[in-house]
Image 1 (cartoon, rainbow, N blue to C red):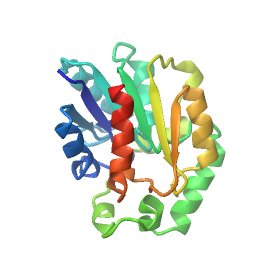
Image 2: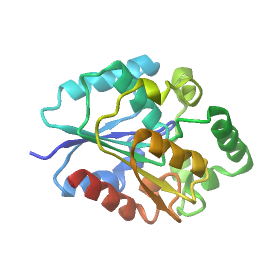
Image 3: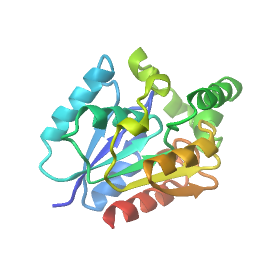
Image 4: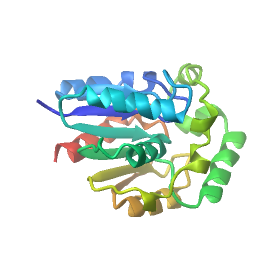
Length: 218
């Protein structure tokens, strides 16, 4: 039996961001799939971590985390708290940097104010991006604050293979910090040229999915 992939959403995103491409793609490859939206059934960060742990305990295969955006910060806190829930491997798609908090927050907030949501999340590459923006949900304060309050990576042991996928066309994240973070994670990194932050909905989503599948398959 193949592993279970747990797709961890970033802030403001729910299952809809995976449903269109990634879930059909990985189902066709034979994987079991579960989506963890940070606050769909949770009132705060602690509740969200507890829900994920309860769901993992129901899984009877090895599991893999694929996170998007701020999802990596959530998984950092989760693995720090629940040391008995270690994945086989992890893939971080457009992950939030884990160093230089103030510098990264300034960059992200500046672009959030300056750019339209279509440009911020989709770099102007996705037709009818507004339909996705309209689905975005507010998050509880403890989850929204993760980019400020996250634990130092030095306090968390990652003894599993990690792949980081980042794009130079990501308007949400500071590239140099993402690359530096990959080194701290001891992660393999792939840097793309054109894909937007919401890469699972980008016209080149299959490139991202293929890179992810190649890594977790090997």
